[in-house]
Amino acid sequence: MSLWSTIIFIYMIKMIKLKCNNCNKEFDQELKHYNRRIKIGKYNFYCFYACCGKKIERPSRCKPIEKICGYCKITFQSYTGKRGRKCCSLKCARKLAASFTPHTKESCKKISISIKKKWKNKKYRNKCLKNFTKNQMVGRIFSHESKRKMRLSAIKRIERNRFDGHQMSPGFNPRACQFIEEYGKQHGYNFQHAMNGGEFHIEELGYWVDGYDKEKNVVFEYDEPHHNIKQEKNDLQRMNEIKNHLKCTFIRYNEKTKKCEFFI
Image (cartoon, rainbow, N blue to C red; front, side, top):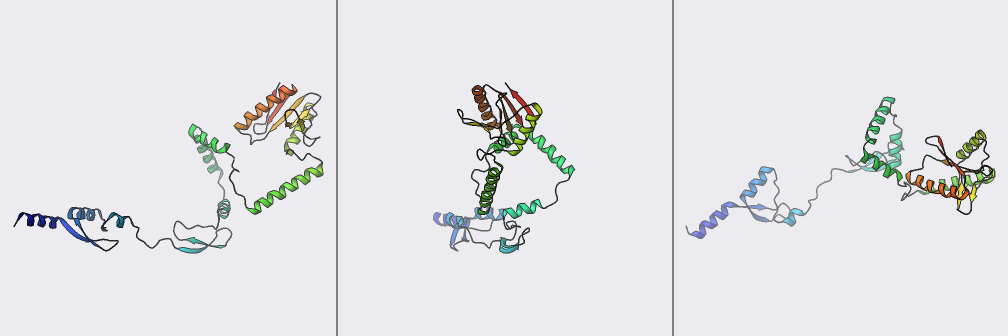
């Protein structure tokens, strides 16, 4: 045998002919690569990277099917398997979850203890505070029914305030007005508030105060529970401006802590 024939013989031994799994073309591949792939358990071979990159159409496991909603009992299109939904919409899913039996007292205690442990971690606490300070109404899309209900409730509120003879703007909290009236009777103050002559308007500063006694020069502010850290800073700045202008004593009541603070 000549040198060239021995080289060709060795080359033929090391190569093997295979058929592409995608385009059905015959091609040569080294025997060691073939044995390596079979040991791994891969029995598909491709002639080029383009054929290997093409996706082979396989029958999908999830098939479309009609289901009945678990809450409103309306038929809707869903899929079999894990992708399938049990309810027709997110509202029905939330209502269905709320209809289940609530937690027992023991489970509620365990949940509260676990949340308190998590709250001690600074990272978890900062994340919760960031999410809480964000306005949840920004970017929210309301349906036509919810917009209609909001319009009707606003009209009812305006008609009720007009019938009772209360101020139309700015908006006020009737619960706060009742508390200011009771506090004034107990401590000898005659506060002017939204349900008693309207809120006192400081025209030079452009502020309305929740309650004001002209004779004793006392301002009363009622802080609702939704006051966050940013709003507290703005409230302190506003309070200092009013104090410097009127030179009055300031009473601030916090509904969450149920405590009154005096600022002279």
